[in-house]
Image (cartoon, rainbow, N blue to C red):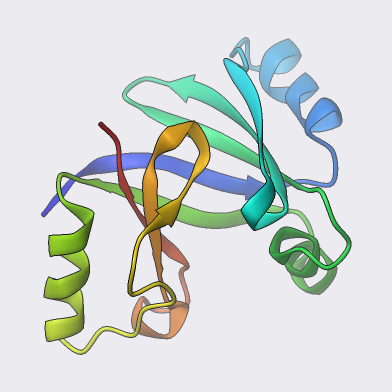
Length: 133
């Protein structure tokens, strides 16, 4: 079911400030910045080998990333696992009693279909399933 780690999402207060570390210190490059209005977030992807780092900046004080930073500070927000068929993956997980945040996929950055697994089912880790075409 799982193909690879698609990306690691990192909550930041400012993409512009955070990208300096990844570009100037580590020599990586942001390949695109996108706003996902439905999730009240701006994202920036940084390719690293076969995976990516996703910087997440809230576009609203009441957005999920803003609430995360307020509670936990900046840092790793989620790990995204790439799947071929997200609907099938969700059904399999539901059948195994896994608690899901999203039982139906939603739109994610880069046109991906995404769904989140509740941290209570994944040892405290917010997992994102991600299907890219």
